[in-house]
Image 1 (spheres, rainbow, N blue to C red):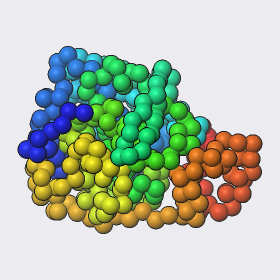
Image 2 (image 1 turned 45 degrees about the horizontal axis):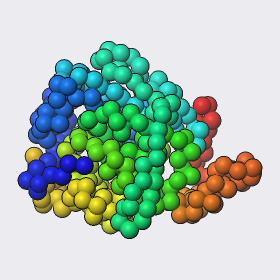
Image 3 (image 1 turned 90 degrees about the horizontal axis):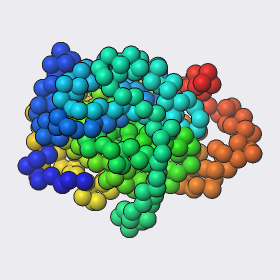
Length: 335
């Protein structure tokens, strides 16, 4: 990952009045043309953690379309992609249709790819004293020279926030990536290191409070954030939501690994971020409390999620789900 000097960390935050004009202004502030050249192969990773557009949960198709219209006149090749939903819940192709991506990508000349259908390979490294490994598509490792993350401003019941770095977990092409949550903070840092996101355009037209990542309370903010560094913008996003950075371990580990900075005073911004600060929270349900164990023990995760007793465990668990959890399960059963 190309390191920036302290003077080079840029972040933009504003209310949206005219979407396309505001996106252009945000990109100009973070000097996007320094990263996207006329011969660039650009990959865009939205957050499609649900099979159709859901306010505050997935990236707005309107924002994506607006961004693609700007990119198509600059970059040589633009690719947009996502992996299949976790635990066989839905396919990336389902999510593409649910977000109108086939039509939008055709209209803007953008290639659409399901990362779960592409060849991938193991990437491993020592991250802050622990050896971790992930699998990533060859396309992203070999053929892309400008990776752009398009996350949503939202909380996450397990990782506190899910912003640009957590959005990269969707590049892990295995639908059963939930079996590999152990050392997730270090794995997210490894993915960030391997994919080197050079730009982030964060959707805060709606933000998610209360739970995350698949349900919660969507809040209409009509905002966008952008940056030339994933650690910087994730620190900004957490601060805007009033989420203590120490609760989002992956961001702090990434800073220690030299991938960016978290000190907002050292990031050049277009405005005082404190003007936009709110107070969000993420509240665990009974099922979430039990699921924490699966993030720490891969053997237990395998037993619960992918074993002969999985149907029995899920059958018992349904009696302890709250109304929001039941709604999500019922909707995903259609896929």
